[in-house]
Image (cartoon, rainbow, N blue to C red; front, top):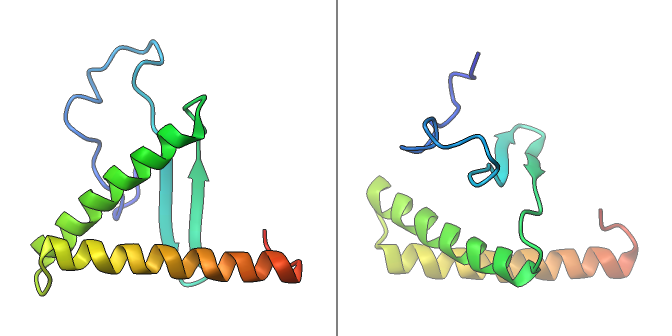
Length: 100
């Protein structure tokens, strides 16, 4: 049974072979207590995951444009700023010994 706010599977996933060539990389849920995240380190080289995150950012930017109020470029720039701010916060927490 899926959650009423779960996203549908992308086209083609339901008919993909069950040989491990198609797999889910992440689940991210936003709740009142903050994000709930599960991830799979699917690539041997973490740089490849960084490239996947960049592509994910483009998809989020497009979704924000479709929602209205921002162009894809404006949304992408805001996402990049948020990425940098998030890393700065994480770096500060690491220095204080409070990082996860």
